[in-house]
Image (cartoon, rainbow, N blue to C red; front, top):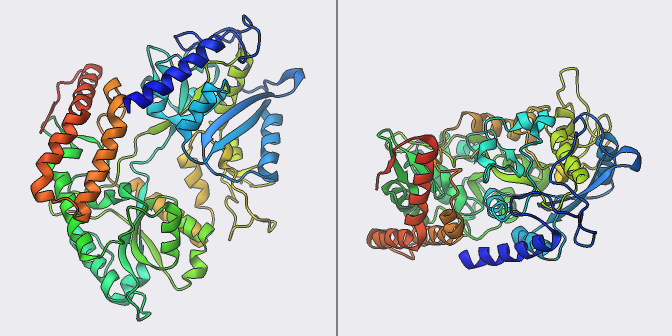
Length: 535
């Protein structure tokens, strides 16, 4: 990981040197690599009010925006782009990348085509910010009150050497994961909705072996999900989770999840269920799209997923048509033998909309204006749903009266186009408020998922914002080892009873110890605490 990261940063540094960037993250002396030097400044002089368009007499300012995604772009999204340009004087030239976003961004940087605004992971942001890749906006936030208020109380987590180079995309829920269950299968088998981990065990067996869909065939599993991460509600019953998190205990010690006895107990439970054949054996290899299709074909009955996936199954994958007699409910994570439960913790943010170090003052203002616009209801609804009174409507209280439409169509019967291609900043409460508008099966799922998420429990990752140099250098290799070892334990390819201590020692030796000690030191220094590790 260290060699790969260093290579990317060296390549980036060469490009920024050519472009005239300084090491503090200020803007370069030119608009681009081919422009003459000496034409820019690191600060915006007397920026205009965030309520006024920035295009001026010369028309809207064009900024390039980079993000990972595969959202459809067509005449509908083109109309939204034109609408935004008219409303705020900013023309968005969008570049979506379907796969390998970090590598694609590095290639763009090395070719002198760094985007003006880019949505990137938090650790990637810190990595590039330390190399002087971005433009400091800390002195500009007062001029964009919507944006400043959006991340109130969190800006300090974006600071690198006292400077801020982007805006966080906020997720305002304890967890983003939910569990869906085939309620009709429960009814067919005379079972109650599972509440404890023992209930889960019973339901997993019944859904696998007792013909829950009554088709006379042995063609179902109890559980599936799109990869290792979605095992988290099961692990929560044992006080663990499916990521390398750190939990604060009542005695002011810290549990290292990856090497904890709680995590071992969770893996042991999953190993037993996997050996019994009640977990779909493709749980670790199936893509998200494949899991959607399995769910819609009725191949499993308990599904842990991203909050929107059960609704999306109805809206985009035809679940209602393929399973016309199905009844689906959203349930809480199971309670374990010691009364513990919880889903994967959702940090307040994990991605940043960062501003390129090669921005002119005009482009910098336009980028900030676009972000500020998304922090207003009208702006967010535009980048989420489309053009007001064309693609969506609101009542007197501002409630969206049409969002995704009914059965994939808008109020005029046209096929719905997803406008989220332009969305960089999440506004989850506003989105969920709108999603609850109608009583379609999809929106019923969205509403139930929101209710369960809001009331769910999760254990906070204490070091969520302590991304030290040691963390950035080692986390990719640690994550790979952590997940691959865990999967081998679950599948029985490694004996957890005899090889657990070896796994722990290897995890710590390959960087885990350096990472956690550096994060502990940073946390204690920043918070004035004196915590220690339990293990």
